[in-house]
Amino acid sequence: MKKYNIKKIIKMSLLILLGIFLILVIYFFVGFPQKNENISWGINFSQKHAQTLGLDWRKVYTDILDDLGARKIKIGTYWDYIEWEDDDYNFGDLDWQIEEAGKRDVEVILVVGMKTPGWPECHIPKWAKDLTKEKQQEKVLEYLEKVVVRYKDSKTIKYWQVENEPFFPFGNCPKRDKNFLKREIDLVKSLDNRKVIISESGEVPLWFKAAKYGDIVGTTMYRKVWFKELNSYVTYPFPAVFYKRKAILIKALFGKEVINVEFQAEPWGPALIYDLPVEEQKKSMDLERFKKNIEFAKKTGLKEFYFWGTEWWYWMKENQNQPEIWNEAQKLFQ
Image 1 (cartoon, one colour):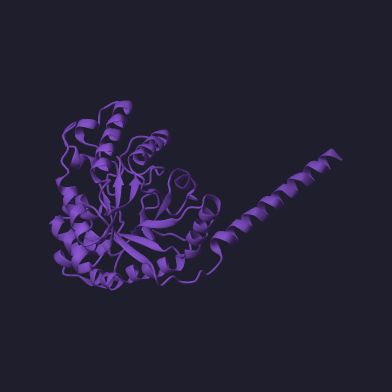
Image 2 (cartoon, rainbow, N blue to C red):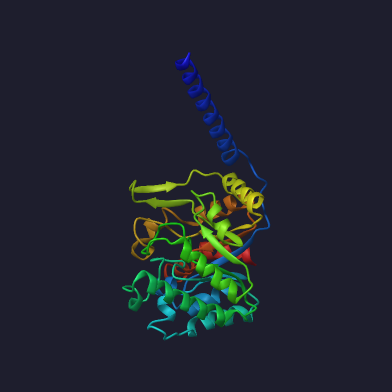
């Protein structure tokens, strides 16, 4: 009798688990959300990325605002650019970016902290790389305070984003520290009352951590990337409804909005873009894929997207005489 009961319990448990699994599959993978034709489009801008592509970064920036017509921009601040030496700050380049955006009534998301968009992700000055963990964190907080205090009176800043995908182990970065992230967020909130975005990878997590820590959840969204583990390109299998339903869950459980803060619009290949031939670049991003990504975004139901790769569009236009993606993007902004 006991053996029978154990077998029965195991069988029922497996059936329950199978039922839960099927419910989750149906919830996250089945459905066709109504297309959102009124997405509010923005762009990411990285001075460092533009410079590494060999471009005049100021010209790229003003052309993004004037020729492309972007009116929402997410700017990554770089600790190694602003504090070259300990306690020696140079805000000239960032001041210029904020001022130029302000002249055109452009809304800015300013990303602050040690880990901000663009390789190597954690932009640590040389003088700070060998500090102890405690001393390095102390210096990050000092830097963070300097940035927020400097720009908190600017009407151009719409949101602060504290760190970039702080829960995702990507880049040349110190070990993740949730307690320190909380200290960073608390510091920013003590200095200014704007909402704080915390971002997470779009494909794997449920965004619960970002929702717990941030006022707004920022998600990334990549479609075709190089997987070094497989030595090949992979197109993520997640349908548009996957992102839609995760956003609904975040709203229901945490009462918080989800926006896309990093939407793939440039190549992701087996090497950094600067070292990839153009033909290899096109295996993961070209005009056709760009258009497909836009249609995919509309189906997710999310209302706000920030393209990642605008500097590359510009490089393709100016250095490769291939302006197709830049021209296609203009239609979204104008």
